Image (cartoon, rainbow, N blue to C red; front, side, top):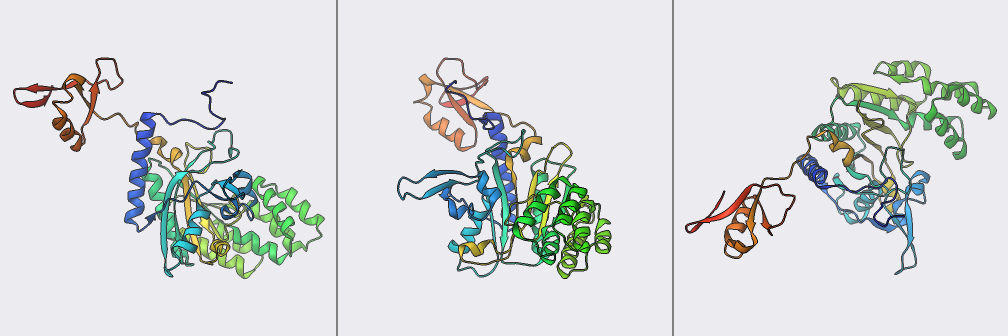
Length: 379
C-alpha cells in the first residue's frame, strides 16, 4: 500500500476548492448571524456517552471510538454535531432560560459512508433553536435552511416534509413494542406495503392498525395528500395534531414546491416530530435534513424543545463558480528587505504579495514590485 493513499471515502480538498468552500462558509455563517444565530465550536472528540451513542443505534454505528489514555474511558469522534450543541444548550448556556439560537460548521467523521457517492468526512453546517415548541420555530428554521442552500448556489429546491409523530401515534395505539416499531420503521423505508401488511397481520393486530400501517407508504405527494391522510388514517389526536403542523408549514411557504411523505422516517432516533429535508434535481439524495427533537437535552439534564437542520458544506458549495486564486504581485528576494514596508502595506490592502526566489512557482503572476525613484510600484 502506498503511504500517501487516504482511506476510502476520505479526500483532500485542494486550493481552488478550499477557497470556494471557505467563501461559501463565510457567506452562510454571515446569513446565520443576521438571523440571530450565535456560532459555537464543539470539540471533535468527546466521551462517547455524551455523543448519544448509547441511545441512538444509527448514530452509534457511525461513531468511531478510541480509548482515552488519560482517563481510561471510551472516547468518540463526533459523527453528528447536533447532540453536542444540545449539550452546550443544556449545560454551558443553562443560565439562559429563554430561546437559544446556535449555529456551527465543522467536520464530522463516519465509520462508514452513508452511500457509494458520499464522503465519510462531511463538513456539517447547521443551525439549532432551543426553547420554543411552537411550529413557528420550525418555520423559521426551514426558511433559514432554504436561504442557506440558495446562498450555497443550489437552485430548484424541493422541500420535503414528514412527521414521525404520525407513525409513533399509531404504533402507541397498536401497543407495539420497541422491537416491533423498529421493524416497521425499517420496512417503511422501502415502501413495501404488502410486506408491512403481512408483518402487522402476523402480530395479530386489529385491522384498523394493520390498515393504517399499510396506508402510510401510499401517503406521499403534493400538499393535497394531507386531506387524504385525514380521511384515511385513524382519528387519533396525535395524528390530527401532526397533520395540522404539516398544513401550517405548507401555508408558510405558498410559493415553494413541497413534497409530503408520511412514510419518510430516515432520521436519527432522537427526532420526535416534524421532519424536513431539501432536495435538488442534480443530487441523488437530500442536500439538507432537519426536524424537531424535543427532549434531547434531557439526556444532559435540561429538557427543552428544539428544532434544527444541517447539511454538508462540501455538497452545498458545488454549484458556485470555481474560486480563483487572487491576483498576485511578486517581489524579488533581493529586493525584499528594502521593500518590506511597501510589501506589508499592499498586504494590508488585501493584495497578495509573494516572494520571487528566481524559480518557477504556481502563482502565474506577471506583476512585479519594482522601485522607481524613491517609490515601490507595481509593474
